[in-house]
Image 1 (cartoon, rainbow, N blue to C red):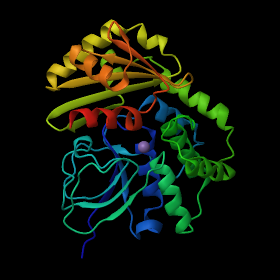
Image 2: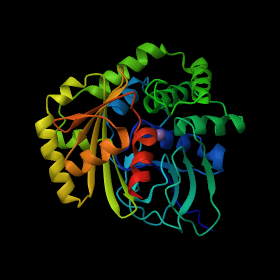
Image 3: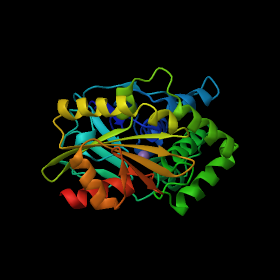
Image 4: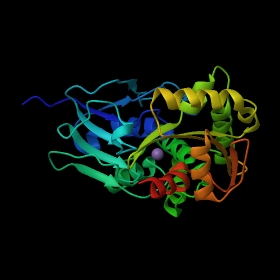
Length: 314
Ligand SMILES: [Mn+2]
């Protein structure tokens, strides 16, 4: 019997974790699953991930995923999400083969029993590390470097409230192989992430944007993580106007945009209209000035924004 082609893919607007998780699973797929699977991506590679991929010495055996717009007949290993609204079309009950994720279960179904590994860790790559360790798979230096980078990216160098002690321990163990100066490496990653060169205003909102169905409400939350929040605040007029367009085009009930200052650990939360402003006031009890609310200590959409919005809206 012909083995169906199997792909590994993460969410739309892929971040470093989504791309790297797919790359690592593909690289070790024969050892993990017993067959070859191919890494794909559900969107453009962002500037932080580009920096990480360029950092690897060339040539490397770990392949960069190609863009995939729709799944046809392939079997799918889904990484870094289980949210139906955040995956490309064609992934369904019939072809879902496995999920590896660290988010809340988003509502996917499957016809057959699937391989599922979901843990409340700071990064999908932390879970992948545990899988590799359990299967006694030897991790290469390039793979270790990539996985550390994903962990630093998702946990904001262990500062996000999503970080667990396990993530820190895993990064330490990986760095025995990768031998990176983590402080320097993370500073360079975040600098690359903050670079606005060639980035249109629309992209600032959309690069790390997620859509959620919350009860009857269609809600979008864009996040921009940066070490230079002033460079974004400067563009607030253009950002609000781009938000307005997006909200209309996608027929959203609420659209939020948060600028996360990675170093100062705070968020400037853009509230498009009175509707968003009232919701934010209800949840965060904060004051807003010209529709921007300052939220000290808030850096995580997953832990500090989305559950709170869901609670009020669902
Ligand atoms: Mn992730």
